[in-house]
Length: 248
Image (cartoon, rainbow, N blue to C red):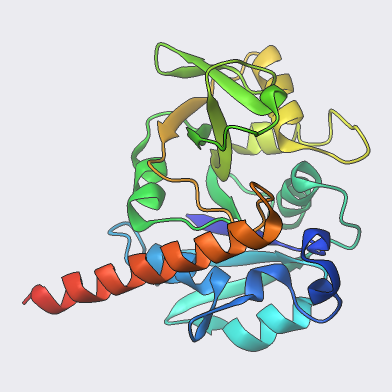
């Protein structure tokens, strides 16, 4: 399995911080934010250090990820794919498709989303080759970003009314990755392109996330969201450490 972390964005919502810091490298405790998800990935029972790969899609301040993670992260091979122009999430995924020429499904996530071990495992285990991870959003989230579901499948990947939102974690087949440049609105947005994939007959399953922890969120404000996310991540990390100490 290839695990793709999309970490090319400029982090414009972070203001001047983005001039010198890649958003996902924002320090939380003594680690950059993105490392918490990478560490959770390594705890997955499905990780194979011999054959699996962690691939960062990089662009803005790529050197920060390259210097920090190097060629291997705790035994897992690390590669870097450059997104020269930051034209959206769907574009980043298509860059991966062209660079890797995958023959099977891969798991991808936004670098500013916190992903738990069980979420990686749930995608791996899901019988569908295309899967979205959905969660509840803030009450002021844009309504057209809602996802509709029925009978275990996504029925609308955009402009639904279920109260569920895409949290930035997916399993995607090569066939759907190939469609990622089909819909363009100022940038190539993944939800529009997943909706196009549905219209072309591809099935998309889903898993539900209990929490949506998103460092790049803007609600209720950017500052309040960052404060809440930092507190959540540190609390989760502390709880995980306590659990591991109890396990013989």
